[in-house]
Length: 536
Image (cartoon, rainbow, N blue to C red; front, side, top):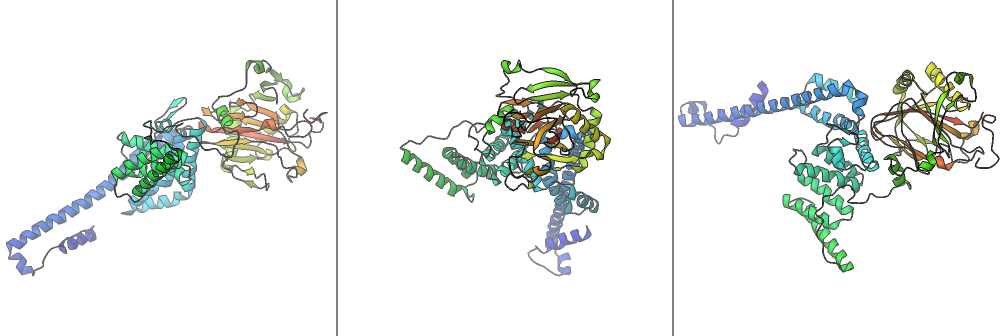
């Protein structure tokens, strides 16, 4: 503090117009009055310093109070809190961006304890890629469940209304994430929402000019020149000296009039309707059945009519008089008749589920898929979850579950893969895929053969989303804790049943835990003999 005051004193004195000797100062009242004003400037400088310190302290206190309330809520039920996708996104954003801003603020007058804590915990913080991934997950949910940006921003998700809100700056950052990925469709939706909230009077760090800059160019990229011109004119009106706005405006206008002349059409002003979901068409992507898949995720387009429903039954299943199931047979329900998909009730108890999750948590890693060209395991955007593999030797519960799967299916699990446990968090999904390999010379099939069947355990209920859907025949199976579904991936001939292409829909609200067993061909020769035709 002493050094700081000394610096202010000499800095202010150095601004005086003239210097005299000490005697001359004290003998000249007129000049002494100058020192009065100098002192006043020093006091003002001191107050500015105090104000800056108090402002910094107030900002830190405000952060502490806000996060105190936030962590009290989040730590009371961590999984329930993270079940809301907006909470998950904002956690990523806070730890990656906002805590760093707070660190910079504190570093203006270093606090050793805070910096030490930051350094210790920083290794566990999400990084830029994680924050971007969380933003893209919200956009994925927005597309799949046809939710506008307003719904997310105000926490209005199906079946719930939450206080998890997105600010102007949050919406701007979402739009910027999409823009940086050349995803102008989502950039428009989120920049428009940021502008809407800013126009409504919400305070923000980002300026309206910055929002209009991104929004106008993104609208241009979507092919809407009249609206791009109107937005750019708004930008020029706010900031006439903007670096790009003037040039963009002239370019857009020339381009539009050129198009109108070529088509011999008159100029039509931009639509006054606000940009919203459906204003522009979402660009096509790699997935041919995208629309069917997403409709099924929303519960639309289901092909389970009354005629099909009449062919579905429920029964008790004893595994062909398996001794372990005779006294307590499984409850079996048909989910679909062809291909035959069944659901078993009360497969896993709550205690077993908790033990499986406990064993899996420390081993969870980003789930991988096998590259269809190279056969190498790799991560992919179409599979977003974390998974772990558990052996029977890990715990008696795993050995017991493996035996139960064998008892229920009548198939040996001696050649099956380990029990895979997967957790789908915010926007977690696995787009349409086949469980069986379609690579005829896949070296992984030489020992145990192809994936004959899938046994999928649901270990949680999911508040919204998270269905298992089959786009080929329009079926959707919703998670129910403790139940399991089972189907064959191959015909009895060993040929793949291409109807079984299925997907795990993005989780909208909740946390989805599943475990599955992929049962292979080897060892099933007398348990599931070959059929007489290729499609038996």
